Image 1: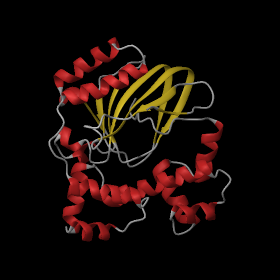
Image 2: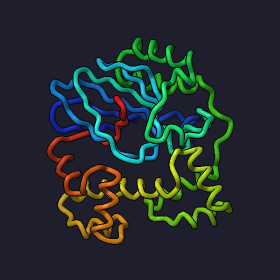
Image 3: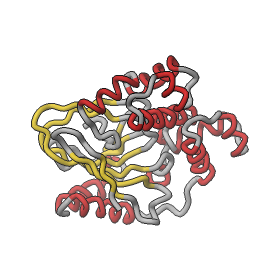
Length: 271
């Protein structure tokens, strides 16, 4: 099953593909952003708590890299042939594969060759040989499986992340400490190491994501109504938090979506 995100106007198209069952506990999806951009175009990438492995095959080709969790939006310029492929790990899902504290990658990236030298070269060669977007996305599943699926994941942390997203970020961090039976410092350390973000920041991002969904669903909603529905104290609170994470006010974000069109789900910071 493949879901596509519509893009208004000329530009690249975005598609996703779910992982196989063995990788579903770790991977949110595989994605591709492909097409041709005739004139410079900005592409706003929003924080989502995920870590991606990014492979570029277009005109701005760079070596594969691991993109850390983001705390703020980035606007990435696109021009010419675009062919970006990615493995988007669930929050905490990359840690069993990478096996180091992921807070060192937060708001940054690292060449995949520094971690997996052989795979970094081989992946590009095999992806170039594959024909068509769907063949390349299916190959990403195969390539990651060849790295061997980790025997275990941190189930307690995965549960905590699930609680945050189920509550759409409207969750006291203290309640996570109580449910997991750990202290504040230990919870913070485990989140920063496995997710790259503190639980408080992940809650902020989850709440912002819910707000963007509401904006897309109700573009004409008033600020106070939107703030209440998204779980903010008031309109001012929504405005401060939304701008800090996305770089735009809720109204400006809605206008950008309607007037320019962009692919929110694609993550290509540093491209």
